[in-house]
Length: 315
DNA sequence: AAGCCGTGGTT
DNA sequence: TAACCAAGGCT
Image (cartoon, rainbow, N blue to C red; front, side, top):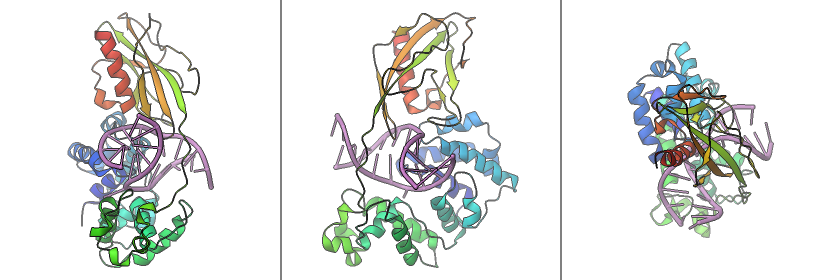
């Protein structure tokens, strides 16, 4: 049976995230923190920095909470779905996946792939998310007693490759005989879902201050909310309309003539970047100077802003 | 309990 | 290119 630590780590990383994006992060985490006890002993900033770029940063905060909770009980993961689901960052999907894959328990693993495969096999026309309970019941009926982990991964792999969202390869599908949606020629349309509301555009201003010794002014964002717990350039709130300008330190700010554009889950962001050189003894109102800034430690939107600001400072 | 929460690849 | 989409969880 695979290492529960590896299964848990990979499943958390895979939440709403593609396999290709996860692989380098999984390799880096397991190399740097080979056991859950070592991860539990890591500094918060190191883990957040290692997670930077992967997105959904609450996962990283909960990952640490979970690792520390497991370390408290001898570094052994609980083997039942219910006990797993009680840990931070482990919901119904991840609890079932870890129970099935790492512990061989019969658990009904339901993710977006499973929902899509169930909706197609049974030609469920009810739109999401209303169809969720019915799709879960269908998955329950099909889940075997033997090798539940292999079964779960097989259905998810089918959904990720052949029974794909946009253009399913029904012609080579191992379940083509029994698929009601294929028989009706509607597989690609399922599961049905309601149209999503358009994303609003928010504006913001961020500030890049460079001290005489080359250190840059950064701040750690509050734990809750967007990019929570991550390192970033200080600035005002991101709002629809005119953003507030709140420089983190007194300086001769100049506007970089290049906007940073970035799209989050529920809004588009247009960011104005201000840059300034400040004296060696300058004292910031917010944040702190960082000597050797690694762009890789920043979330993607902040990497973009940093690059634009540095380009202006050095050109 | 519906809204919040990232990112990069695909169409 | 703008929209869609991914092995969801938290509040």
